[in-house]
Length: 328
Image 1 (tube, one colour):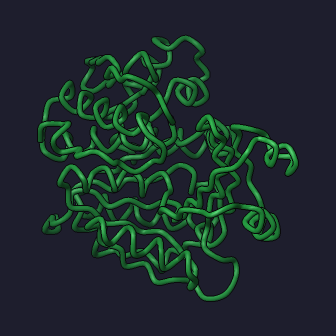
Image 2 (image 1 turned 120 degrees about the vertical axis):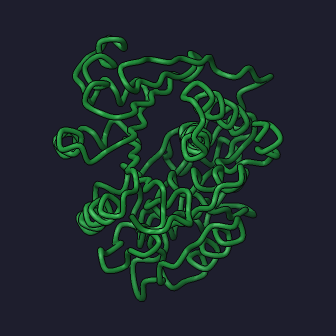
Image 3 (image 1 turned 120 degrees about the horizontal axis):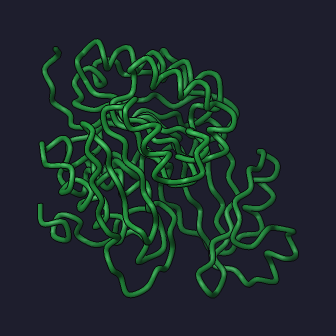
Protein backbone atom coordinates (compact mmCIF):
# COMPACT_ATOMS: atom_id res chain seq x y z
CA UNK A 1 0.00 0.00 0.00
CA UNK A 2 1.27 3.49 -0.88
CA UNK A 3 2.15 5.97 1.85
CA UNK A 4 -1.05 7.84 2.62
CA UNK A 5 -0.75 11.62 2.86
CA UNK A 6 -4.24 12.71 1.80
CA UNK A 7 -7.58 11.94 3.41
CA UNK A 8 -9.86 12.28 0.36
CA UNK A 9 -9.22 12.83 -3.34
CA UNK A 10 -12.31 13.62 -5.42
CA UNK A 11 -13.05 13.63 -9.13
CA UNK A 12 -15.93 15.79 -10.31
CA UNK A 13 -17.25 18.64 -12.40
CA UNK A 14 -15.23 21.85 -12.14
CA UNK A 15 -17.96 24.50 -12.23
CA UNK A 16 -18.07 28.19 -11.34
CA UNK A 17 -21.38 29.48 -9.99
CA UNK A 18 -22.22 32.94 -11.30
CA UNK A 19 -24.95 34.43 -9.09
CA UNK A 20 -26.86 37.68 -9.58
CA UNK A 21 -30.06 39.12 -8.07
CA UNK A 22 -32.97 39.70 -10.43
CA UNK A 23 -36.68 40.45 -10.52
CA UNK A 24 -39.12 37.66 -11.34
CA UNK A 25 -40.17 39.61 -14.43
CA UNK A 26 -36.75 38.95 -15.99
CA UNK A 27 -37.08 35.22 -15.39
CA UNK A 28 -40.45 35.27 -17.12
CA UNK A 29 -39.10 37.37 -19.99
CA UNK A 30 -36.22 34.96 -20.56
CA UNK A 31 -38.58 31.98 -20.52
CA UNK A 32 -36.83 30.26 -17.62
CA UNK A 33 -38.55 27.92 -15.18
CA UNK A 34 -38.48 29.70 -11.85
CA UNK A 35 -36.63 27.58 -9.30
CA UNK A 36 -35.57 25.02 -11.90
CA UNK A 37 -32.27 23.87 -13.37
CA UNK A 38 -31.76 23.80 -17.14
CA UNK A 39 -28.75 22.56 -19.11
CA UNK A 40 -27.63 25.14 -21.68
CA UNK A 41 -25.08 25.31 -24.50
CA UNK A 42 -22.29 27.84 -25.18
CA UNK A 43 -24.62 30.23 -27.01
CA UNK A 44 -27.19 30.07 -24.23
CA UNK A 45 -24.54 30.71 -21.59
CA UNK A 46 -23.28 33.76 -23.47
CA UNK A 47 -26.71 35.29 -24.03
CA UNK A 48 -27.94 34.69 -20.48
CA UNK A 49 -24.75 36.08 -18.94
CA UNK A 50 -25.30 39.27 -20.94
CA UNK A 51 -28.69 39.70 -19.25
CA UNK A 52 -27.40 39.20 -15.70
CA UNK A 53 -26.91 42.08 -13.33
CA UNK A 54 -23.82 42.56 -11.18
CA UNK A 55 -22.70 39.01 -10.43
CA UNK A 56 -20.70 37.13 -7.83
CA UNK A 57 -18.54 34.22 -8.91
CA UNK A 58 -17.83 31.30 -6.56
CA UNK A 59 -16.52 27.88 -7.42
CA UNK A 60 -19.01 25.02 -7.28
CA UNK A 61 -19.50 21.47 -8.46
CA UNK A 62 -20.80 18.65 -6.28
CA UNK A 63 -17.56 16.83 -5.42
CA UNK A 64 -15.66 20.11 -5.11
CA UNK A 65 -18.27 21.33 -2.61
CA UNK A 66 -17.74 18.15 -0.59
CA UNK A 67 -14.00 18.77 -0.52
CA UNK A 68 -14.56 22.38 0.58
CA UNK A 69 -16.49 21.03 3.56
CA UNK A 70 -13.85 18.40 4.30
CA UNK A 71 -11.05 20.97 4.14
CA UNK A 72 -12.99 23.31 6.44
CA UNK A 73 -13.20 20.44 8.95
CA UNK A 74 -9.43 19.99 8.76
CA UNK A 75 -9.04 17.15 6.27
CA UNK A 76 -6.23 17.01 3.70
CA UNK A 77 -7.78 16.79 0.24
CA UNK A 78 -7.07 16.83 -3.47
CA UNK A 79 -9.33 17.50 -6.47
CA UNK A 80 -9.22 16.33 -10.07
CA UNK A 81 -11.47 18.15 -12.54
CA UNK A 82 -11.20 19.86 -15.91
CA UNK A 83 -11.33 23.61 -16.55
CA UNK A 84 -10.48 25.55 -19.68
CA UNK A 85 -7.63 28.02 -20.06
CA UNK A 86 -9.84 31.05 -19.43
CA UNK A 87 -10.87 33.52 -16.72
CA UNK A 88 -13.44 31.28 -15.03
CA UNK A 89 -10.92 28.42 -15.10
CA UNK A 90 -8.47 30.65 -13.23
CA UNK A 91 -11.20 31.55 -10.70
CA UNK A 92 -12.00 27.90 -10.06
CA UNK A 93 -8.35 26.93 -9.64
CA UNK A 94 -7.70 29.88 -7.31
CA UNK A 95 -10.76 29.20 -5.16
CA UNK A 96 -10.11 25.51 -4.64
CA UNK A 97 -6.42 25.99 -3.90
CA UNK A 98 -7.13 28.87 -1.52
CA UNK A 99 -9.25 26.42 0.47
CA UNK A 100 -6.15 24.30 1.04
CA UNK A 101 -7.12 21.65 -1.53
CA UNK A 102 -4.44 20.23 -3.82
CA UNK A 103 -5.35 20.77 -7.49
CA UNK A 104 -2.98 19.78 -10.28
CA UNK A 105 -5.24 19.26 -13.33
CA UNK A 106 -3.86 21.30 -16.23
CA UNK A 107 -6.33 23.67 -17.96
CA UNK A 108 -7.64 22.59 -21.35
CA UNK A 109 -6.83 24.76 -24.37
CA UNK A 110 -9.54 25.89 -26.77
CA UNK A 111 -13.30 25.38 -26.65
CA UNK A 112 -15.48 24.64 -24.84
CA UNK A 113 -14.89 27.17 -22.04
CA UNK A 114 -14.97 26.42 -18.31
CA UNK A 115 -18.27 25.11 -16.96
CA UNK A 116 -20.51 27.61 -15.25
CA UNK A 117 -23.91 27.71 -13.60
CA UNK A 118 -25.71 31.01 -14.18
CA UNK A 119 -27.94 31.52 -11.14
CA UNK A 120 -30.70 34.15 -11.13
CA UNK A 121 -31.71 34.88 -7.52
CA UNK A 122 -35.26 36.17 -7.01
CA UNK A 123 -36.12 38.66 -4.24
CA UNK A 124 -37.44 35.79 -2.08
CA UNK A 125 -34.17 33.86 -2.41
CA UNK A 126 -35.38 31.37 -5.02
CA UNK A 127 -32.58 30.24 -7.34
CA UNK A 128 -33.18 29.66 -11.07
CA UNK A 129 -30.17 27.81 -12.45
CA UNK A 130 -28.82 27.46 -15.98
CA UNK A 131 -25.88 25.07 -16.23
CA UNK A 132 -23.29 24.93 -19.00
CA UNK A 133 -21.06 21.90 -18.42
CA UNK A 134 -18.36 22.96 -20.88
CA UNK A 135 -14.80 21.81 -20.33
CA UNK A 136 -15.68 19.76 -17.24
CA UNK A 137 -17.12 17.07 -19.52
CA UNK A 138 -13.76 16.53 -21.24
CA UNK A 139 -11.57 15.20 -18.43
CA UNK A 140 -9.28 12.60 -20.08
CA UNK A 141 -7.75 9.61 -18.32
CA UNK A 142 -4.28 11.00 -18.99
CA UNK A 143 -5.13 14.06 -16.87
CA UNK A 144 -5.45 11.93 -13.71
CA UNK A 145 -2.91 12.60 -10.99
CA UNK A 146 -2.28 8.94 -10.20
CA UNK A 147 0.22 9.76 -7.46
CA UNK A 148 -2.40 11.89 -5.71
CA UNK A 149 -4.95 9.07 -5.97
CA UNK A 150 -2.46 6.53 -4.64
CA UNK A 151 -1.77 8.72 -1.58
CA UNK A 152 -5.44 9.02 -0.58
CA UNK A 153 -7.38 7.09 2.05
CA UNK A 154 -10.58 7.57 0.02
CA UNK A 155 -11.27 8.27 -3.66
CA UNK A 156 -14.62 10.08 -3.96
CA UNK A 157 -16.41 10.05 -7.33
CA UNK A 158 -19.24 12.29 -8.50
CA UNK A 159 -22.05 10.49 -10.33
CA UNK A 160 -22.84 13.53 -12.47
CA UNK A 161 -19.49 13.08 -14.22
CA UNK A 162 -20.27 9.48 -15.21
CA UNK A 163 -22.46 10.74 -18.08
CA UNK A 164 -19.82 11.88 -20.61
CA UNK A 165 -17.54 9.23 -22.10
CA UNK A 166 -14.10 10.69 -21.39
CA UNK A 167 -14.54 11.30 -17.65
CA UNK A 168 -16.29 7.95 -17.28
CA UNK A 169 -13.19 6.21 -18.67
CA UNK A 170 -11.01 8.37 -16.42
CA UNK A 171 -12.99 7.38 -13.33
CA UNK A 172 -12.75 3.69 -14.18
CA UNK A 173 -8.97 4.08 -14.39
CA UNK A 174 -8.99 6.01 -11.10
CA UNK A 175 -10.94 3.21 -9.38
CA UNK A 176 -8.32 0.70 -10.49
CA UNK A 177 -5.51 2.97 -9.26
CA UNK A 178 -7.18 3.57 -5.90
CA UNK A 179 -7.90 -0.07 -5.24
CA UNK A 180 -4.39 -1.01 -6.33
CA UNK A 181 -3.04 1.39 -3.70
CA UNK A 182 -5.35 0.07 -0.98
CA UNK A 183 -7.64 3.13 -0.91
CA UNK A 184 -11.38 2.94 -0.44
CA UNK A 185 -13.71 4.10 -3.23
CA UNK A 186 -16.71 6.27 -2.35
CA UNK A 187 -19.37 7.14 -4.93
CA UNK A 188 -22.26 9.59 -4.87
CA UNK A 189 -25.17 8.77 -7.18
CA UNK A 190 -25.85 12.52 -7.68
CA UNK A 191 -29.29 12.37 -9.31
CA UNK A 192 -32.00 9.95 -10.41
CA UNK A 193 -31.53 10.99 -14.06
CA UNK A 194 -27.93 9.77 -13.88
CA UNK A 195 -29.19 6.41 -12.60
CA UNK A 196 -31.77 6.23 -15.39
CA UNK A 197 -28.91 6.44 -17.91
CA UNK A 198 -26.16 4.52 -16.11
CA UNK A 199 -27.86 2.42 -13.46
CA UNK A 200 -26.60 -0.81 -15.01
CA UNK A 201 -23.02 0.49 -14.76
CA UNK A 202 -23.49 1.40 -11.10
CA UNK A 203 -25.08 -1.92 -10.25
CA UNK A 204 -22.19 -3.70 -11.97
CA UNK A 205 -19.61 -1.68 -10.01
CA UNK A 206 -21.40 -2.64 -6.79
CA UNK A 207 -21.67 -6.30 -7.78
CA UNK A 208 -17.95 -6.38 -8.58
CA UNK A 209 -17.11 -4.96 -5.15
CA UNK A 210 -15.54 -1.80 -6.59
CA UNK A 211 -17.47 0.68 -4.41
CA UNK A 212 -16.87 0.69 -0.65
CA UNK A 213 -19.07 3.64 0.36
CA UNK A 214 -22.19 4.67 -1.55
CA UNK A 215 -24.06 7.94 -0.98
CA UNK A 216 -27.69 8.31 -2.11
CA UNK A 217 -30.90 10.08 -1.22
CA UNK A 218 -34.31 8.41 -0.99
CA UNK A 219 -35.20 9.04 -4.64
CA UNK A 220 -31.86 7.71 -5.87
CA UNK A 221 -32.12 4.62 -3.65
CA UNK A 222 -35.50 3.81 -5.19
CA UNK A 223 -34.18 4.39 -8.71
CA UNK A 224 -31.18 2.13 -8.18
CA UNK A 225 -32.99 -0.73 -6.43
CA UNK A 226 -36.43 -0.51 -8.04
CA UNK A 227 -37.93 -0.55 -4.53
CA UNK A 228 -40.36 2.27 -3.73
CA UNK A 229 -40.45 1.32 -0.05
CA UNK A 230 -37.47 2.85 1.78
CA UNK A 231 -36.81 -0.07 4.12
CA UNK A 232 -37.08 -2.52 1.24
CA UNK A 233 -34.56 -0.48 -0.72
CA UNK A 234 -32.10 -0.53 2.18
CA UNK A 235 -32.60 -4.28 2.63
CA UNK A 236 -32.00 -4.90 -1.08
CA UNK A 237 -28.82 -2.83 -1.42
CA UNK A 238 -27.09 -2.91 1.97
CA UNK A 239 -25.81 -6.52 1.76
CA UNK A 240 -24.06 -5.71 -1.52
CA UNK A 241 -21.91 -2.81 -0.29
CA UNK A 242 -19.61 -2.10 2.62
CA UNK A 243 -21.24 1.14 3.72
CA UNK A 244 -24.50 2.53 2.36
CA UNK A 245 -25.42 6.09 3.37
CA UNK A 246 -28.87 7.46 2.51
CA UNK A 247 -30.03 11.01 3.29
CA UNK A 248 -33.73 11.70 3.90
CA UNK A 249 -33.94 15.53 4.09
CA UNK A 250 -35.91 16.55 7.20
CA UNK A 251 -36.17 12.87 8.24
CA UNK A 252 -32.43 12.63 8.84
CA UNK A 253 -30.11 9.97 7.45
CA UNK A 254 -29.38 6.26 7.61
CA UNK A 255 -26.19 4.23 7.26
CA UNK A 256 -26.08 0.47 6.76
CA UNK A 257 -22.78 -1.27 7.37
CA UNK A 258 -21.77 -4.70 8.59
CA UNK A 259 -25.37 -5.84 8.78
CA UNK A 260 -26.34 -2.99 11.12
CA UNK A 261 -28.52 0.03 10.32
CA UNK A 262 -27.87 3.32 12.14
CA UNK A 263 -30.12 6.38 11.97
CA UNK A 264 -29.75 10.02 13.01
CA UNK A 265 -32.30 12.84 12.90
CA UNK A 266 -31.78 16.01 10.89
CA UNK A 267 -30.18 18.88 12.81
CA UNK A 268 -32.72 21.58 13.75
CA UNK A 269 -32.27 24.99 12.13
CA UNK A 270 -34.25 28.20 12.37
CA UNK A 271 -34.98 28.51 8.63
CA UNK A 272 -34.14 26.58 5.47
CA UNK A 273 -32.79 29.19 3.07
CA UNK A 274 -31.29 27.14 0.23
CA UNK A 275 -30.95 23.36 0.00
CA UNK A 276 -28.30 23.47 -2.74
CA UNK A 277 -25.28 21.48 -1.62
CA UNK A 278 -26.96 19.76 1.34
CA UNK A 279 -26.03 16.29 0.12
CA UNK A 280 -22.52 17.44 -0.78
CA UNK A 281 -21.85 18.76 2.71
CA UNK A 282 -23.48 15.75 4.36
CA UNK A 283 -20.96 13.61 2.51
CA UNK A 284 -18.18 15.90 3.74
CA UNK A 285 -19.12 15.42 7.36
CA UNK A 286 -19.59 11.67 7.02
CA UNK A 287 -16.30 11.17 5.19
CA UNK A 288 -14.41 13.30 7.71
CA UNK A 289 -15.64 11.05 10.50
CA UNK A 290 -14.87 7.95 8.45
CA UNK A 291 -11.25 8.83 7.68
CA UNK A 292 -10.77 9.74 11.35
CA UNK A 293 -11.98 6.29 12.39
CA UNK A 294 -15.15 7.46 14.14
CA UNK A 295 -18.13 5.19 14.74
CA UNK A 296 -20.92 5.29 12.17
CA UNK A 297 -23.37 7.24 14.38
CA UNK A 298 -20.78 10.00 14.84
CA UNK A 299 -20.08 10.10 11.09
CA UNK A 300 -23.81 10.54 10.43
CA UNK A 301 -24.03 13.25 13.09
CA UNK A 302 -21.17 15.18 11.49
CA UNK A 303 -22.91 14.90 8.12
CA UNK A 304 -26.14 16.25 9.57
CA UNK A 305 -24.33 19.20 11.21
CA UNK A 306 -22.60 20.14 7.95
CA UNK A 307 -25.82 19.82 5.93
CA UNK A 308 -27.67 22.04 8.41
CA UNK A 309 -25.03 24.75 8.06
CA UNK A 310 -25.21 24.78 4.28
CA UNK A 311 -29.02 25.00 4.03
CA UNK A 312 -29.11 27.94 6.45
CA UNK A 313 -27.69 30.35 3.84
CA UNK A 314 -27.34 30.92 0.10
CA UNK A 315 -24.66 28.98 -1.71
CA UNK A 316 -23.09 25.53 -1.48
CA UNK A 317 -19.87 26.41 0.33
CA UNK A 318 -19.71 26.68 4.14
CA UNK A 319 -19.79 30.15 5.70
CA UNK A 320 -19.68 29.29 9.42
CA UNK A 321 -16.76 27.63 11.24
CA UNK A 322 -17.51 23.96 10.55
CA UNK A 323 -14.83 22.76 12.94
CA UNK A 324 -16.46 24.68 15.77
CA UNK A 325 -19.98 23.57 14.82
CA UNK A 326 -18.92 19.94 14.56
CA UNK A 327 -16.72 20.01 17.63
CA UNK A 328 -13.71 18.48 15.85
